[in-house]
Amino acid sequence: MIKNIGRYVILMLETFRRPDKGSVFCKQLMREFKDLGIDSLGIVAIISVFMGAVVAIQTAYNIDSPLIPLSMVGFTTRQSIVLEFSPTIISLILAGKVGSRIASEIGTMRISEQIDALRIMGVNPASYLLLPKITAAVIINPVLIIISIVIGLFGGWLACLITGMVTPTDYVVGLRGWFEAFTIFYALIKTVVFAFIITSVSGYMGYYTKGGSLEVGASSTKAVVYSSILIILFNLILTQMLLS
Image (cartoon, rainbow, N blue to C red; front, side):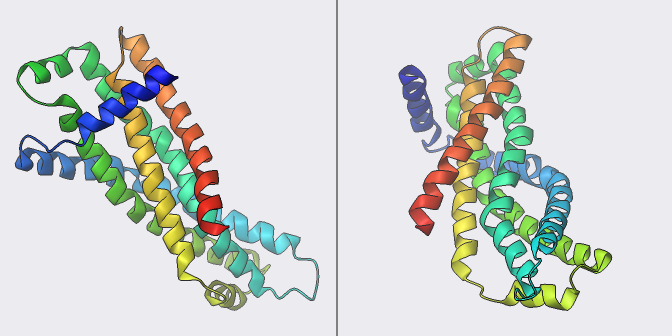
């Protein structure tokens, strides 16, 4: 563990050096925006709409007291999606989709000696390969989470409209009631931290891959597992720091 932590820190120090060519970095950054962000928009939207619908239906089902206003369905759905479901669950999904892709891509470059070729040509391979991915994820993932929140709340409204368990008016009243802007800020802080974890850990696992195609697959699996564990761990730490 100590060896891996040391190698990870050294890799991050190499990664965050100034890029050799700014134009090349910008070109790679635009490509990573598409690969890591836009290509993930579909799965984020599908998960978010059903997630919001399920939370709304479950909340309405568990309100069995006439003393509790039905507007609490909208309030509870909003709080659940903003505080936990969108930033954490979507990040876990992205860890599986994006993390495995990064680890397999860089791992393939390692076993095919492309990384060694970059170093021989005088290019810093860590900065060239990892910095655009980390930067793109840190910028684009909060955008995905905002979209996920909006779609999730719409999914809850749609579920109320279709099932009739709660009127859409009561749901919207709950959405608008007792709103604190800090909850959005809290969700975005978690998202940025999770984005860095996903890209840096996955890049680390791919960068130090040894062997052949089987080892690349193993590195991809480890990247997803370790990223997910760290996301859950830092979710607890950030929640304790920001909400207590």
